Image (cartoon, rainbow, N blue to C red; front, top):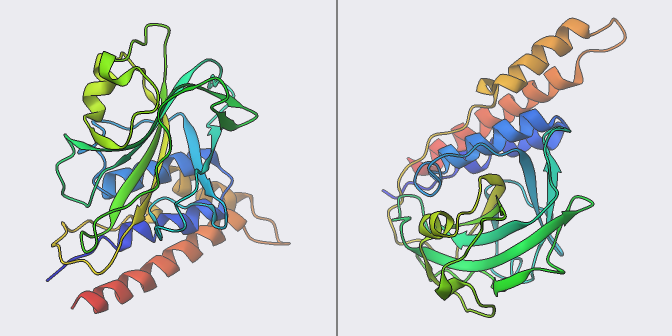
Length: 266
């Protein structure tokens, strides 16, 4: 039986879309990366200080794990960065990367590089490459037909003054190729992950067995539970807490989606 990673890609977007609370969104993306087996398989740890939003023309803002077509992700997306709080410093230089982490359960030690730009900046909440070095300009995903849903991960790293890329990845205009992401981060002395997000692309019908993933339960997110409790306590006779209602709606939708997904897999 082929088990597809359906549930983790469906549950959290309902919550994050209904909440402007960056703490909730941070927890949501952390949960997504864990349940999508991107942590610790691709990233040993993931403690983002900001929200990274991917936006494709004709699609709009992409939810974590959203399934897109090859045509939809062909143009270069815009990347928006939202700091978790006022203490987050988004000045200076950063490195932007996009890699194909393949399907769940794949070997993450040698993945495909689709985008790598050094010395990008964040201006008015948007990543700018006006003064960047494009080692590999954005190249749209092209997974092999029948190979399953590939996870394309966009990551923004801190780029300190000590940054020194390896000689084979220091010049612009390199094409798409295999890539040791963690080796590059270590060797070039990049800093911590500032923010990250991902989407999936699948071509054809999967003929590959894919490792199962567990569902993300929205009610287990600490920030959501705190917000819902506080909101309920603060509700007046004129109306109930919108945050609590959002969580209830999200959990109801999750339950329905979980049952539907299980029925499809039986």
